[in-house]
Length: 417
View (tube, rainbow, N blue to C red):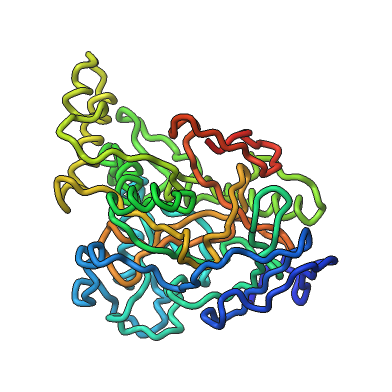
């Protein structure tokens, strides 16, 4: 892996001191890079899982997916998409962020194939219809695994993943692969085999939440000239550094120095703010009924309020409902089940202070219901470190279910459920 990051130690490879069980490649040659398996605790290997590098939709789900390349937007770039303002694919990513943030930007997404910011409205990679080559800088998660990873047995959390080399911030790690199920199929599969590897594709809801109220933040003429200026009740104010400011760059530099000095970083020094973009789900869903949810427009109106902010919230909730309903009145998020079929991404453990973040990416379809789910490093990660992400479980969401968290982070919440 090429990098100009001076914090990354080239040629430093992690090697375990104790090996009681070893497997050369759990993928059986299906990945570009071999993924070894080490157990330093006992002599057992991981349970058998059919390894796949692609998601596997059921017949019902596949019939719903729009995979015809003719439905994909594409670019006509011949310069490896270096100019984001002229690349049609990158402009889709930029447009989504502008709508969500209410600011004018000219660049976001990948930077030399690294993702320095989590983008709630999704990334649109170049695709099979584009004129650019495979060397295009806007093609990342569609390529095979590049990071050298290892499956290993942890003390309290089953099997986990660690990196064998230093990873610079923004490095692509892997995607999340499994069977792609409709909601009722997921409910049935959960009852029969368990739902601990379930993850919902709720990109539509996340993106709509990010865009709530963006109309009130549309840049004025002054903002068009200076993106850091915004209007507040007619008064011009300086916008605080946020998603595309320099503040987070300083945070990652400070966190990198902490890690190199073997200090424990605090949660205030996170590189990426974790958004509830994609979460593992332990749930028992009931089939759709005619009963209206408590956050619907009609029920929300029962609460008397003259606040304009409340009216915006009510409107935005209704808008979120409408977006998915364009696909059908009973449409619900689809679910990835990596219980029996999956890739290395299924072994990523939870942490309340994760070093990995999740990103929705559109590659083979622009159908908002079916983004690819990708993992990226949210900070400098030294060789030998376990890779973890925040499952975003909601404590108390599943009745009579209690899961203790063993992540060991200083800010550990104590419970997963």
